[in-house]
Image (tube, rainbow, N blue to C red; front, top):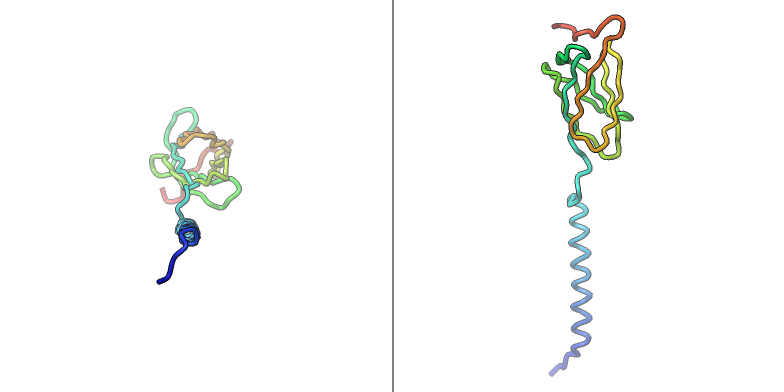
Length: 124
């Protein structure tokens, strides 16, 4: 009968385990088993002075073309990659403001009128 050398069997088992581990790690990388690098920033945009919520304010991620518009209650939520650090708030006739995100998940902001005042979106 054949006599199997135990050292060869252990080496073979070790090679198979390493290849199996490599395949599992490759599969995990392909299917996205990684930490999500986005977070959601929320907040309320109000008018400076009377704290009335502002509808239709543009909230943009600085350095991208990604943004959202505030709802009727001045609320917004936007998913931001950890690679971006600022939001820009703007509207016609309001002074634009840039806010650093830092470690915050909530950013509330008061916008000021320009000389003409903040315009409400057309159709209201």
